[in-house]
Amino acid sequence: MVEIDPIKYMQLALEIAAQGGGYVSPNPMVGAVIVRNDVIIGQGYHQLFGQPHAEINAISDCIVRGHAAAGATMYITLEPCCHYGQTPPCVEALIDAKIGKVVIATIDSSDKVSGKSVKALRDMGISVSVGLCQQQATDLNRGFFNVHKFGLPQVIIKWAQSRDHKLAWPPGEKQWITNEKSRLHVHQMRSQFGAVMCGIGTVLADDPLLTVRLDHDSAQPVRMVLDSKLRMSSDAKIVQSARESSLYIFVAEETLTIEKNKIMALTDLGCIIEAVPSSLGQLSINAILKRVVSLHINDVYVEGGLAMYQSFYTQNLVDRLMIYKSNFDIGEQSQCALPYDLTIDRVVKSSKVIHDCYFDRDSYLELLLPARTE
View 1 (spheres, rainbow, N blue to C red):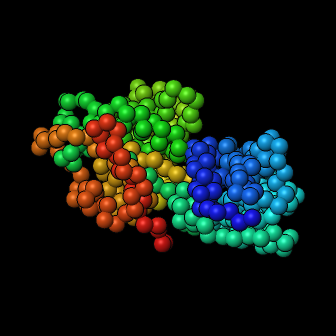
View 2 (view 1 turned 90 degrees about the vertical axis):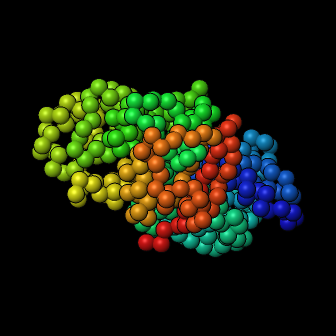
View 3 (view 1 turned 45 degrees about the vertical axis):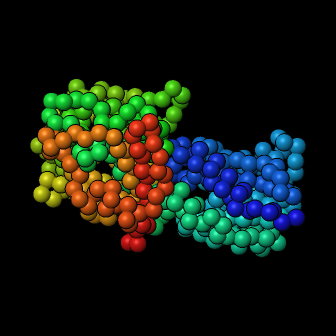
């Protein structure tokens, strides 16, 4: 029997795949749904790096429900693996389970897979189709695809602004721009990505922790601060918590010689100091992002400040924007305003809207920028 609405099942697979965000990197987020006679008989997603993949969990769910997967259709958001890594090849499990048909959203671009599993399944007489909800599947794992295509992670930039495009209150006025619900959402987003990053200006101004603080256990991203001259204070909250939650501080190469004693003190507190090339006092963003990938991180969540936003944006290194906007003006007394090319009216013209909603009176807009081509 042909499923009446195959898109519905792939959409479910994509939805459950997203639950792996923050837990599976450098693996992609993957979901799988098994259907027979238009009834779901099993489903699963990749929950944790090093543990069973989505296909295995879906087959196991079938067994728990009292079903056999033989002859059924499996909807998978990404081509199954065909090599031994942390777990055995999923393609062998599909063959052993005698799955009748496999519907794949998109091909795995990594060299170890990249069409090989599709061929292996077809060689065993299993019907395979590719391309259902393909764009959504690639968007879901843009970080994974970026790493394999460009050697760079997905960069997500988040900012909070007032209605009149201001990113901060005037000096001396410390209060939130957005409400509590928006700030809770920020913590939920942090937990989805492998690293959270900010500039030293944000640390000096706000003394943030950059950790995920939710009522339930959540994945904690690696924290990263760009600090070319190492102005970081040993008393900063982010430093004082470095032994509990990883902290990388990126400095200019010459700073290693100039600040030897300070580097030693910060290292003793648990910080990891990374030197990268710089030019005119600006750290090489490309070098930093390549180091991020070497740490097996696919996605970086950038939280500030304005100079960093502009640096990433002008170098075409931004993949996604998450913008929180309050319903009030701060006024001209604040000098920290978005430049025209980063205002919502401007960026939305060249982006795809992923989410557009409200948290009470705050608005939230999530935009996906065009995929990189080089």
